[in-house]
Image 1 (spheres, rainbow, N blue to C red):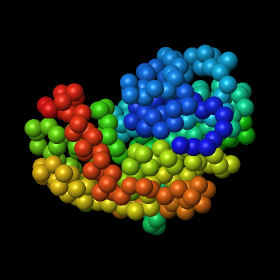
Image 2 (cartoon, rainbow, N blue to C red):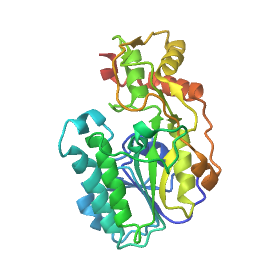
Image 3 (cartoon, rainbow, N blue to C red):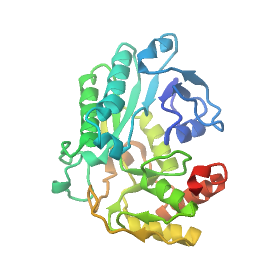
Length: 303
């Protein structure tokens, strides 16, 4: 748990990453349209949208973790405006509101997919060239970073560029690991487009710990969130086969994004001393067995 002083709000506590941050930090106040899961006991402030932020006028607020947005690449890339509507406008409106309040720290999230794949040198540091014109999703994250720059002199902000965060969830999400586990737990065939890509995967709890440690630093600007090690999709499928006995079929389809990626974690480690507690094997196994325990109540997994 962080040693930070002051009151922290977390927007988006019902999603993928929000609940674990709240669960590990019971003094953080949740804000959003949907309450966090029932096992999270944090105070919750209901707002229908970021147009309703006036309800926070009389709240004492020192820090904000902003998790509102969509990471559903397929949906956002199929729409001309969804990336703007879901990722850019909410951040703009929220930063405009907090630019009139004196915050210690605002934390928001973009993506390592901003880095220019054609110029990759591994591991990839925050100083690496970006190329945001790949698709609607990545472009929305680029615009988000530009909005942060616009408010930089009024809202001290850390932009966390996320690699592949994974962990247990009951939600229908586009992320590879929980989606594959949901397939494995169903009677249907489990498959992935390709087992070849090598990516930097970070377990949910490790990500939550890193975020809270960053809150206590004077740093502002972008910072990578990964582990500094990489694993192939094939390796993850093998770990899950050892857990479940069910094989994952490789469809051998061409996929987008880098075929080999690893974050340079020097900045995060220098700022916080953080290092991951979970190996890929430990994190995948913990994710699988927790989701297996939920399978009976998540009937949609069973097909």
